[in-house]
Image (cartoon, rainbow, N blue to C red; front, side, top):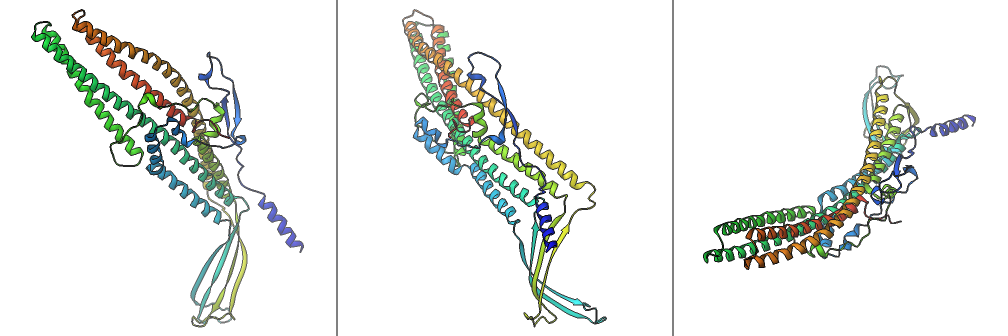
Length: 471
């Protein structure tokens, strides 16, 4: 009885000796606020945050696109989330990670197998020289006792990989929503540019005909006819350029929604798209708990930490219990329960001379852990940079659009007035040509800026991990 007590105490002590250290989080220097939110340039205070104390929310607002109130855009994004191949691949990676976790969890349980053997030889010591036959039929059980936490660490690593895959899918979905929206806005821009180019061509063709008639009457010189013909050709050359751009963007959008290249209908024009979602109500610390790529990177780091424990446990002996239950016979045609066979025992096996291989495996695992840590820190730094860039981009684009709207109105008015003055012979044709060019450029610039602002909001959605934190 005393021996059994000693054995039980020894087992408990060994069970407490788990190889490897528990994950203790990563220390990240987080600014108190974004630089772009400060009225004047000044030094930003930053605090060191340990990620182990932070919740992992990752609560992205996947339905963000509804804020634009464009049914066509809604349908495109919904189809992309269902049929995009990259999203489907990420979904399968989650299934793969789930299967891997089930495999590792099965190692906690005893392994049961069936066995049968047939042997011929001298098995009986009291019958030296006599040849016998021996047949065994039964089942065996082997159970590795996880004294050093090797199996537990393998299970933890698989579980963290599964969580990383799940947040990886969410990151892909957010990026997909952003990419579809940005490409859709670029398609709207291309179609409006195409319409502007066609209007400009029609205007210059009409003006060329008027100048030709005036030349025929001897009112204007040949140079006016030549210049109008040149500008008509330039305008005609811009039409196929924007048509090509439109078709290529349709092809890109088709790829994102998982279909072959097709013509894509569009909904509201750029200036009617709404920007009703507030993407400014968040702090740098919110990114750590809301961006799925950051959370996925930390789970990868946690998985590598568990792999270090596995590598350390591989340097220690494994202890397992095994048992066999079956029937033994010297006649293959005569198996009987009267001849049972059983055994019960334990096994201790460990490495002796591996010439530093197992130590180097620990070094490799620790190096991979450092790589995962640096990758996590890089993901965080990139997240801060993306948001800072987009904040200044959105604020300056709004200023540019306000100026561009005034420029467009003035340019169109100047084009109309200079046309009237030219037909009355008050101004030169060069002045009229310059007013046409400025009006054309002003229209294109405004459309481009409107697209850039909408796309910047789409990228801000991705940069914040799906919008403000929802708790």
